[in-house]
Length: 343
Image 1: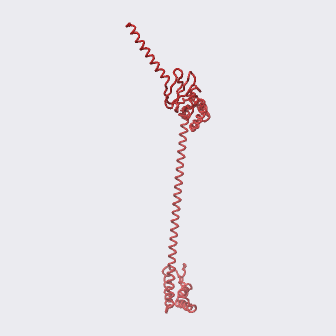
Image 2 (image 1 turned 90 degrees about the vertical axis):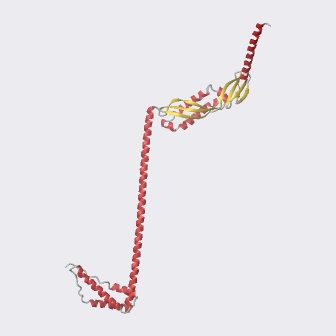
Image 3 (image 1 turned 30 degrees about the vertical axis):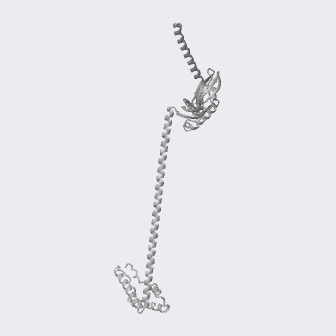
C-alpha cells in the first residue's frame, strides 16, 4: 500500500468520526429537554403549536419539534415607569408604581400578545392616569388603596385574554410640583399649629375643671366639717342644759325638803332678809344717785309676809316640797335693786 494514500485516509476518517459525534450531540441536544420547576416550555412542531411541557424530562423529535417559548409560572414584579398625571383640580403630579403579575395560561401568554410585560405595564399606566384624574390632589395621598384596587381590577380584566393574572398594584411615589410642595408644607404646618393650640386649650380646660372640682370638694368637705362641728356643739350645749336642769331640779328638791322640816320657814325668812339687805347695800356702791323705797324700814314686815305666804300655801294645798319651792320662787322672785335715774 502506498504510504501517501494511507496518511491521507486517517485524517479523513478522523474528520468523519468527529462530524458524526457532533451530529449525535446536536441530535441529543435537540431531542432531550429538562424543564425546571415552576417553568413551562411551549413546543412547536413544524412551526405550529404542539404541546406545553411542564417540569421534568422530555424527548423531542429532532429537527421537527422546537422550544418556541419559555415561561416562568412564578409571580413576577414589574416596575411601572414614572408618568405625569393631572388631578381633578388640574395639578400635575408624577406617579410611579409596582405591578405584580402571574402567568396562568402559558399558551395565551405566548400567542395572545406580542409582549405581555410591556402590554400590562402600559395598561397599568393608562389606568393610573384615568384614576388620578378622578380625584383631587389632597385625596390622592389618602386614597392610594382605592386607586390600587381600581388599577388591579382594570388591568386584570384587560389582560385575561393574554393568560395573565394581575395580583396587586402598589403606588410607590406621588410627587407634586415644588410650588405645590411648599403650599402643602405651609398647610401642614398650619394644621399642626392648630392642633397644638387646640390641645393646649383642651389641657387648660381640663385643668380648670379639675381645679373647680377640687374647690367644690373642698367646700363640701369644709361645710360637712362645719356641720358636724355645730351638731357636736349643739349636742354639748343640750347635754350641758340638761345636766344643769337636773342639778337645779335636785337643788330645788333639797330646798323644798329643807323647808318642810322643822324650823325651815324661819331659815327661809332669814335667807330672804339677808339677800334683800345685800342687794340694797350694793346700790350705794354703783352711783351717787339712787332711789330709796318708801317702806325702807319695813323689812321685817316684808319678810313676815313672805313667811306667811309659805305657811298658808303649805297648810292649804300641802304640795310636794319641790312644788312648794317652785311656787315661792315664782310668787316672790329675788328682789332686784330699784332702777336708778339721773338727778
